[in-house]
Image 1 (cartoon, one colour):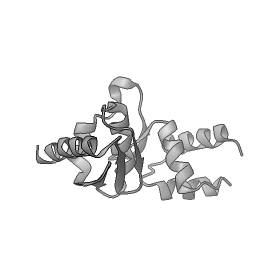
Image 2 (tube, one colour):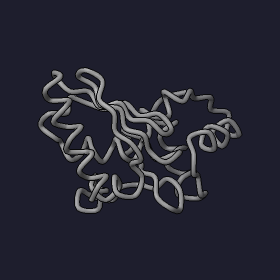
Image 3 (cartoon, rainbow, N blue to C red):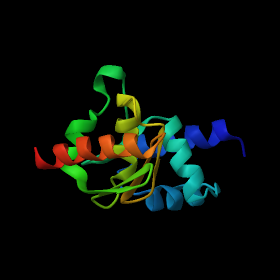
Image 4 (tube, rainbow, N blue to C red):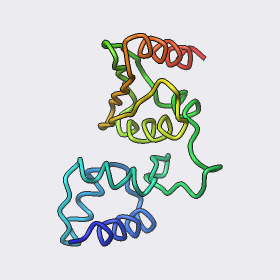
Length: 144
C-alpha cells in the first residue's frame, strides 16, 4: 500500500465524513483495508495539512486560511510547563495536532520543532534560555 494511496483515502474520508479523532480515522481506514499506526496518521495529517475544527478534521485551503496559533491557543491551550530545552503544552483532548501544526506554521524563531499526541504538544527549542522565552510567551497567551 503506497503512501500516496493512503493519503488519497484519508482525504476522501475527511471530505465525506465527520472524523473527530485519529482513532476514528484509523477505524475508517481499516474498513478500507488500510492499517496505519497513530504515528503514521500523525505524520500523514501534518503532510496533508489537516487541522482539527469544531466539525472534525479538515484541510487548510491556503496560507491565508491556515489556523493562527494565537487563536487556537486561546481556544485549546490548557497548560504550559518548561523542562530544560523543552516546553510541554497541554491542550483540550484531540486538539494537540492542530495546535502543533499552527505553531509550526507560525515559525517562531526559538522553536526547532513540535511533536503532538492527543492532548500534549512537545515543543523543542535549541537551549534552556530559548525554552524559557517560549514558555513565557505561551503563558502570556493563556492569560490573554
